[in-house]
Image (cartoon, rainbow, N blue to C red; front, top):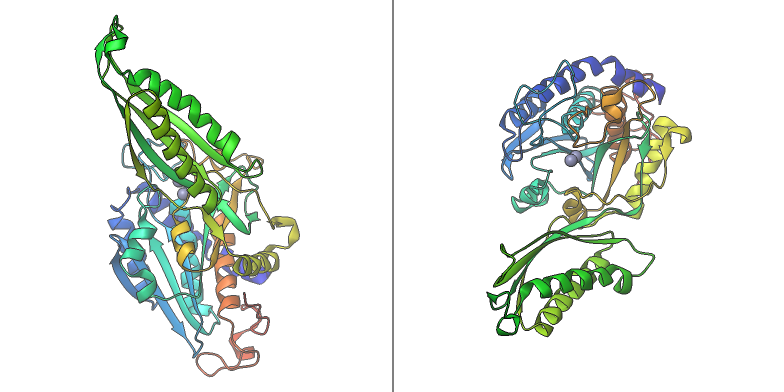
Length: 423
Ligand SMILES: [Zn+2]
Ligand SMILES: [Zn+2]
């Protein structure tokens, strides 16, 4: 596949410049107006049918070729973070307090580079939907697009997405079957007792003692209720009660962060937390209310589509640059919602481990010193091109879109239309 990598590398300069342009003009969740317009205009210019404003600022570009019935979705995210940039890059953010600290500028550029190549040279048979979503960073942009009819208007047989990962050698692809990213839920617990004088606790119902007991009881959820071979986190990140040493307050509040890598464990955590909080409160004569807010789901990569994505990675880069089953991560990702509806897989591309002297690429995402590694524009886009051609493969030997045979297309530039491997 070196010719495909070379073809995308030859055109990468244009998309590196585009990436740096997006980087200079970062936009927060659901405010990606400039970025979305740039994406939509490019896609239209290359012949895609484009729908704008899906789920706020989302964009879908569609390219149909041949008579094939298969439909593929590829997703990139477009939003930036409320962080003041300190990368020192020449293309540093021009908006104070906002930066592309998660590399979504790079994800957008990689998918656009693939979009152009597929429009001009892509040999496939079927429907390609390129999904550019808003608000991945906590805003649930994927869900907003789905509520706006994403998969009803643009049905997909499978969806794929790619995220850069600092600390992993540049360009290395990391795949994983099964749960890959954690769910992330939030709860506010309010304990209501009876306030009173600190010298006369017997005339009050003290929510501070109850809160302390709740914090300790919650430690038993992961250690005593969750299977030791499963991962889960229950963190009490905030505890607020009272203001004076001689006053028993009337209430106390706790803020919880709850994470799991399994849908059943996620349900178990909620059930046990609710039961423990209510029982603990009752034992101290105070009442408890729980405001439970479901965040992102567990991201689960389906087996067949992950196997397919692995084959494409191996074909493009060879086994020495592919991790077939990487470790799960406790971070969260709203592509999980798309995978609850459509089978697919989410993979990582190494952003660099610092060995090449690029500290900003090895710097962890969400750090002010981070920057996307532009060398990934060619590799990431070549991966998308090959994945699209393999998923929407033509019948071997069939003539291509305008009646020319594969041979007439210039075989050196294109992948082998005969090697289909479908998930
Ligand atoms: Zn992020
Ligand atoms: Zn991200």
